[in-house]
Image 1 (tube, rainbow, N blue to C red):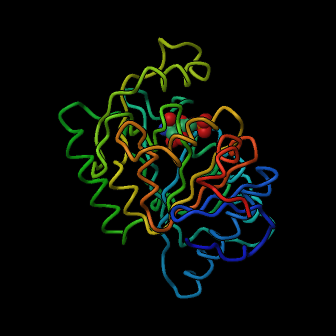
Image 2: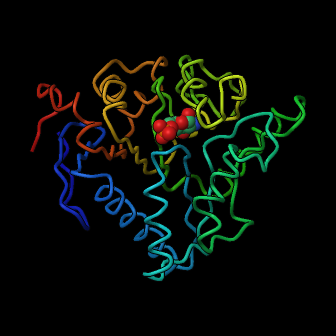
Image 3: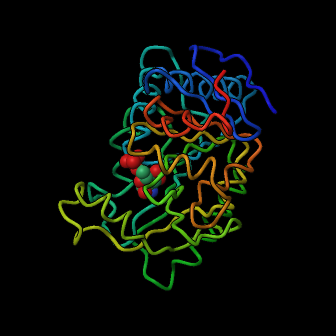
Length: 276
Ligand code: GLP
């Protein structure tokens, strides 16, 4: 049994199990303040040593309040991102980069345009390459992460199929950055943003499960009852390629940041998760 240290800020309710740590908060705002506090300490600590820090970033609605908190820290508490290098998890294939639903657009709209991260430090997979160039691009993406020193921190959400990044059911634990086919559930979840299922891309490039699991620290965020049952599968079900988030059960330094609704199916299972 592994305990969890006292948080630097905020007073969340903790659930204890071996791996990973599960942290349940009264609200998502408190959760993201806590996580942003941890990340800002990492960034400032590295800056004090004159070193870069490598952050793996995620898209979706879930991380939006976290990005808003990072922007607030930048604007009002002097947090600089000048020493931050970013790698995004994934990108749709087949959309022009400036399409409003690309993850490139999303990240600029919701984070990069509002902080001082150098443009040369920002990395996302390209979704516009000719078919023949994709495998080499994926290998280069992996090499860039490696050359940057590996991911110090990886932010995750969780998809309806239990995916992390776009690692849909059947993604091997040791998979690396590659082109994937999107699951119908994932495409249906994205359909409202695209104005209909027919506009949602069928493929994407994603970091693999192995790429993500190599991160030294991982934080998965989830809010709302819609995520409750898939979180229960990921955290208390078997470790399986069918639910790529279940691989996080074996990662030695992962924390799940949940609001009470997202954790509701876990709290009902006291035999696996003890409420402190
Ligand atoms: C997409 C992204 C995932 C994200 C998921 C959930 O599939 N590739 O990284 O976790 O959406 O999105 P949301 O946070 O909007 O529920």
